[in-house]
Image 1 (cartoon, rainbow, N blue to C red):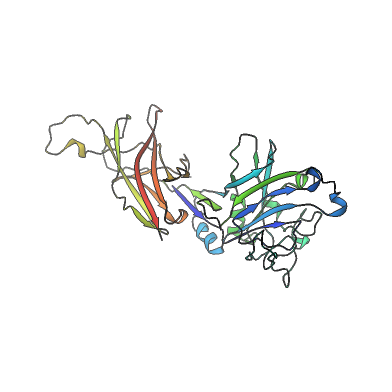
Image 2: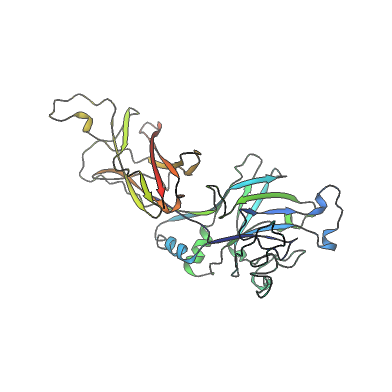
Amino acid sequence: MAVYKIFPNKDASIYSRYSTLNAGRDEILEVSVKNLTSIAGVSENIAATGVDDIRRTLLSFSNSDINILKSFESQSFSANLRLFLASAENLSQNYTIQCLPVAQNWDMGTGKFNDNPPTEDGVSWQKTGPATGSISWDPAYGTESYLFTTGGGTWNSSYLTTQSFDYISNKDLNLNITSTLNAWFTGSINNYGVILKHSSSVELNTGSYIDLKFFSIDTHTIYPPCIDFKWDDSSYNTGSNTNGIIASDNFVLNVGNNLGEYKKDTIYNFNLKARDKFPTRQFTTSSVYLNWKYLPSTSYWAIQDYKTTETIIDFDTNYTKISANTSGNYFTVYMKGLQPERTYKLLVKTILSDSEEIIVDNDILFKIVR
């Protein structure tokens, strides 16, 4: 199995109320609707005056990174866009975020929301780039993209994906964008990234007020946006090896080849060896503690951030299977998706033949270095 993460090469929020403002270097991305009639003491007629505050987010991924993902497309894959919530205000019990591929190229710019005077050297609600000299968002490229204030991006609605939230949902975004990736791979649409927004029914509602802020690529945290690209490259074939398979929870698991530090672009196979904690006594010339066994084929791996205990790659019965060959068990980690100068922990889950589930946490640590 494999998980490969790529990160945006540009992102920005755009604001209908500040229609030429650029926020390409802000640490925060917004997907919000702040129509002023919903705020106490404000009585403007939005439809008449254009006093709305709709906030959308654009993200783009480089063609070189998309081509790396394309090289794995012969496998059955899944691709999810991940954004991590920084703060939220006035959440309703149920809401839905839309994700669509952008239909025009755009420039990120160097601005921040609170710049004074405002920076206007990149994408904004009105323009695809700098306020002076760049083209406007073209309504011919998208539908429902023009509300009270002209602009707001353009998109291809054929590849709409959504994620719905209720009161108890995890509020991080985890959108399946496999269909969009396939369209980029085949050239059906150009790769100009994606746009995140609320539905028109929410954005056009003069009573809407929902504020969602996510970490951007400029965050100083471990939570930048990314695409999780997953495919199954596992193989469980022990060949002629007659070593048995672990059958009880009384076993010891070791990673025999953990180097401790890895460059951020490394692709590395971790080798696993399991043995019975209390091996059967035998008359032999070597220690019975050297007799290793296989983990069952229903075994999986995961990675945690050691300091925060945040799960970076979770156990997945489709995409984090542990493989086996004549030398033992193994799995592959693509270090590119992990943050440099962070320490991570490997976890292993195995499901025994009697359906008992065992999670092994032996403080198997490694660090990503630049």
